[in-house]
Image: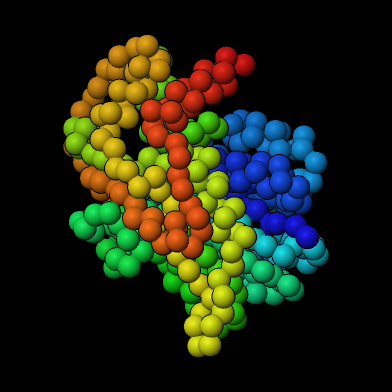
Length: 326
């Protein structure tokens, strides 16, 4: 049997696909290769996957309903879904809100429709985000906390995905689990994320924009730990109790909120070069701190993040140098 993986050419999708293939799974990957960031990076990830046994790729936009309906008819042998495709980026959602509704809401709905008609589906795992915690001030963020105050449209679409998924689990008994990722970084990361932006700017001797004048903290989570959590989740579908929807939500974070300035300092050390900082006010849609309570993930998924930023940042910088030296 095979796993259908959306967002296969994306940062997290690439690493999840690699891990699934490494353990002998068949993976059917889809991605629309949209130009939100450099498509060459997506193609380079995809080229790595195409060289591995058991991987098949289809270029499809999950927001394209007719294309998705036609594709659904080709999925014999797929019994699990990892749905990671999304329009990412908090700040870009201020510029192009329609892209977020199209991909993150309509596209998510199309995936759930595919899932509910898929014979023998064992589990539908999908990406949510720590951004759903929005304006919450209680730390660490717990899955028991209210999530009704999104600070960006991106966050609102991810919360909508959770609610729609719960409804499908309730109505159609689709076994589904949402994963709230906390600031993922690592090799093959996205160019719009802080680790990449800072490393590139410092390398080139250009100023880095530091929001809230550096007074920010993030629960930075290394990609290998996220992948371990995704696979552990996939292997543990929720039970369907009497009257209870087979739907769960978990936090996947490092359970350690780090100062942004320390994160930048580690990049400086790895590069052997000081940053020139352009201190900016807080950006609309942003939050000053994230911090994951992972107690349920430890209990139910045996999730134990092991990579500190002291280890992860040098690994990322090494990859960055190697990739750009090609």
